[in-house]
Length: 119
Image 1 (cartoon, one colour):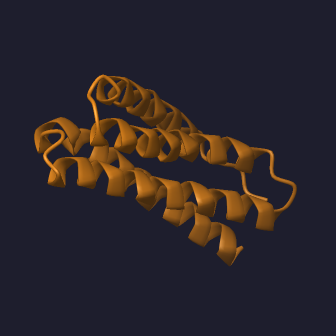
Image 2 (tube, rainbow, N blue to C red):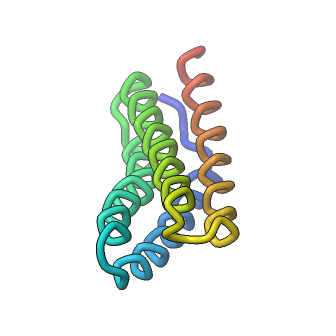
């Protein structure tokens, strides 16, 4: 089992805080915004939760699996952010920093999973 780098734990938590703030704003709008907000909230906050679970994993395989799930959730979050822009529910310039951070989190988690599998 590999220890989780502290940076990714903090980044995932701070990212989740930003996602919650965005979703609170989206929830004030009717229709599709609210529906997409729920999807974004689930995936965006799940990243950090899975990273935390990986820290308490019982084996290397369990660690790798949980980090892989966190990575999948980060990819899903990126999808919802792109969809919000593509459907013009939110402007691209507002979501660009969050999308960039989710891409960086995906890259970091992918590297952690690859390294964990190779050990």
